[in-house]
Image (tube, rainbow, N blue to C red):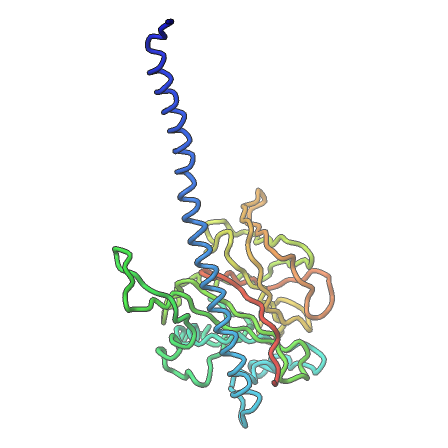
Length: 313
């Protein structure tokens, strides 16, 4: 019998080594799996929050707008947010209105309480009549109530964290159809209650928008100056209003269009370029040529959900 001295031990050690490499390669997938699971949970919670917000607002629209003797005050902002702004003609789109009870009360007494953005824009921000000046009502109404908090050991607690909250954006596609409007729900992840930190709605005027393209260039802005990252959302908040002194847009442009950032790069010319999806939409005046507009960067948005239009039924 031929003896292979020491070879059996070498073969065993080699097999253990190869198996160890396989185990390590499998273990490296666990963090990726945990990240995917966390993102899936976030997406599911955001979608549920958007569904709840959608169902509530349809009921509110019917009760406090369509059937009300005096509609909720936000309704008048669709026609003309403030005196001096160009009134909407019957065949034009209305002004978009951001209905944001939490954001409205968090900015009490500040110039941007009635306007969406850290610095002046012409996108109106409004409260709901039933909320009034009650912060607790705003938090309860605009939050997903199904989030379960846990302690340090992972055990569920009786408290609900109210991690996800939301606002609505409404706009009439044809202004003469008073009770027909588009509805978009913006869901936030961990937006603080009664606190509006600087940079949460960062505004840039004079940005060139080229419909059909996917690039937005911010001249003279470095990457470190931006309060967003890839995967976050931005808003085209361009509204033409010569009385405001904000030189953007052209007659008939009233935008509240949302885009997701897919990449952020600094350019050699000095500035930052954002790649967004979907491609930039056709302006509301129907003219596809580029225009100078207002870009609003939204921090902490977990999802933008375009819902079915609302009507008087």
